[in-house]
Length: 409
Image (tube, rainbow, N blue to C red; front, side):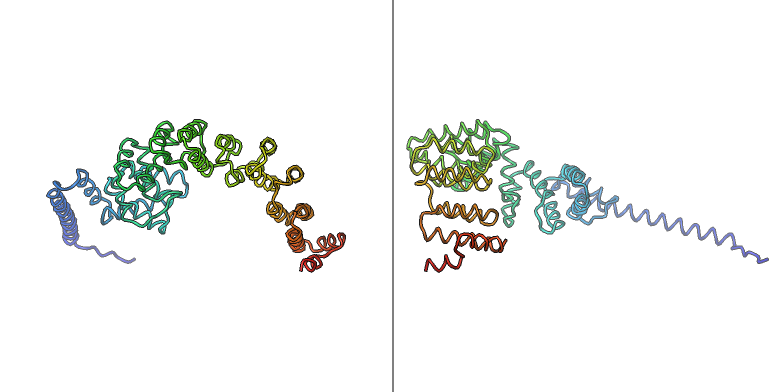
């Protein structure tokens, strides 16, 4: 049997004492380093924020980030790596509550780096929270950067809209102090649009006070009281041409389109009842679920440019919904109001899906050259989709597309 060799007891004691002394020396050195760091921070306390010492103390005792910027970036990277959107948003909001105002630029910079310069929901949340706390600082940050877009707005506009909703009195006062008339007008428009969702009464007051700034914001999903206030604003303009111009501006910003309400409003201003305004309204109306109301509205209109404009929108709208019988009935009922262009466009729109009906529309074109040209186009498209059926139609009607072309030379 192999015998074990014992180490002398004295040697083991010495080794243990050396180890203990090494541990004591290490701890003493660590404490001394911490004390020196805290002493330096204490000497800077007069120029530092109250929370700075405690924040640095926390980083020295367990957080290994080399700076505030690194620490924020690390935490933000952890938050943005969460797979569940709700968890990610909740964690980000918690992080934002813990940030000092001066740390928001770090968070925005880190967010852009993590998202590869993409301005996503997290970036908008960070910028929006900063705008709620210190909008002037957030605006200064935006002024020193390229113009990044968040949905529908620049960064600066996003800050202004957030400020207007959070503290409207201060924000509007700041806007009115702007010396540049165009910039002030743009900012008022932003304010009107931002308040339209949170404080419609204040929004409408500011709209009237600013001579109609912010129409586009007001007319996004407008409420009945919004339309009433806008109508009053138009009526206050005594000049009919100014009323017509304002009414047409309202039509261009109204979204999503509500054709019947739009037509009712426009009808109060005869100068605005032109093809430019009526055509898109009636096209949308005809393509909707209540096309019969649009047809009834047309039948009550007197002859003239307004009727022509309405028909030029309504017929293509009906065709989009494949209500071909209703479209043909209007063409027969108002032959003098239907232009060849409307018929040609209608024929072209049908050529791919309903070529035989498309030819019927083309045959109603008055100009013989344009009529044959439109029919040729339909036959060409038809042959691309179903060459056999296209040839059969041509043979049944006695002329091929080539014959038609030759006859027009």
